[in-house]
Length: 411
Image (cartoon, rainbow, N blue to C red):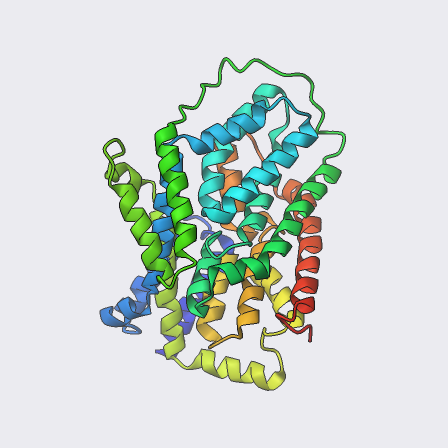
């Protein structure tokens, strides 16, 4: 049975790294789902063990935040932001700065994947209508979404998992990770500005007759803003995070104008299924005893990722092979009771490392795919020319910050 579990596990995470299997149209969620089914059918887990392996509080938080983000989307807020960025009567350099600020700011309080999914098409259309090349702005949007999301427990899926496993406080997390996230946003702006210097010129504004004005529903936007403020207040109370988020989501689903079916339909169900299946797959491996043996071996060799010298390179490699979300879920499954400082470090470093390559984070992939659908092709090397330096500088500062504040030792 151990050999069977190890084989399924290995093939699954190879699929996470590739994003698909050659010749098949199965994606990461499909791969994880098939693997979980095999674990169940092969006897590695029974139905009760599958249910017990799933971290439902994490899924509840993700679901609730997606409902909150759906409220913003239904109000037309994302389209309004994207078009206002593109239409702003400012220099291209200033537009780049606004793109970084808006993308990073929204991603700190909403799921970064949802932010880039909603903003990318309108941003492409608006920039092309103005006569600007959308590619540097798209790189900046993806980089800012990753960097901004590193600041909070609810900025991205991996931070939510880390927060639940470690029982981390929202405001203490912000204090620990907020400054490196802001520096990372500055790195994104400076890097894209330098790499694309001379190609951010504005050849003149074009007419926007072909771009419909987004219908901004101020009442629905007001509800979304009030819900976000209420959520921030709840995070300062003893109410469990998942309960607070679900309460907000439940209140938003009660509406006279927005159908709950539409709101629920905007939830990223494939991402939730991916998480649930990864929890089950990792649990099956844990039951073989191999992870415990591996941790014991790493401990005796002094290679546990509780130090920056180990965690930083591990985050870069893992995030840009199997992806930062699967990497975090896997690491926490085999690493029992990490120190609190290491949890902050894992959240910060795994998120910032996602900017290195397109495959490093789901937000990058979403930007590329949504841009392609809008007629803009963003290549692997184009992203890497910005991704490598912005990641190197932001990770370097983050490591210095974690060491200087006493959150993690260097060696």
